[in-house]
Length: 234
Ligand code: UDP
Image (cartoon, rainbow, N blue to C red; front, side):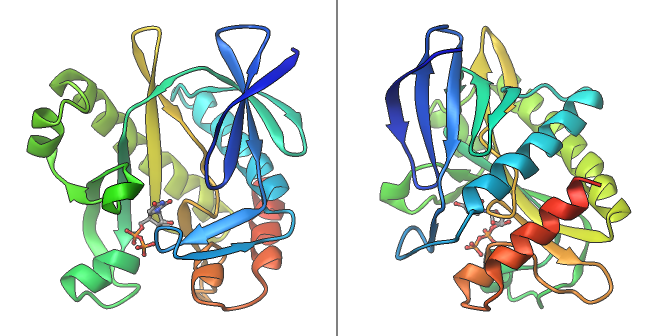
């Protein structure tokens, strides 16, 4: 597959065209942002860790019947993915209270939620990714009711699978954000799944192994991403 011109550069990744119109290359950068890019920095080798961690998770989810844009691991920082039209909704699942759930609802960090909480945010930096519900999605024409049903069903399935996958590695999946895309009339999982997009705590100790270490200047950030990679590579 031949790499062609850049299509788009985001906060953590760059997309390149290829000589096949159905596929693009997703390149993972070391750039890190938090609080809607108010905090910026780099995490050494983050791109390599996230590319490899995402690859492992997409492969696992595929083996369990969840289709994604992932096609092939190409190099340390690059994966080949199907070209999709991103649905501009950030889909969040929470298993334990953390982050904005604590800030918005006064919950104590780490409290187990009695059932997984599904949230949608409008993927729009200009408006600070506002929280929204299914009515907002309909009137803003972000997805059809049928598409949203598919997204919701995949999301709960992905949560159940990932919780189990991480639990076996002695990791606790606290919450995560995923995105979906449209590809040839189907909804498939897209973007990435990594410590940038998930809260992952070591079971037992509660040690944070994710982007919260960058958000809150906790140190040992590279080590935390490396630790997650070591475990998912087992
Ligand atoms: N998240 C993300 N991108 C975003 C916002 C959130 O990947 O733009 C992830 C975040 O890493 C966490 C989950 O979604 O795993 C829930 O995030 P929360 O709303 O608590 O965000 P916070 O404001 O605390 O970053």
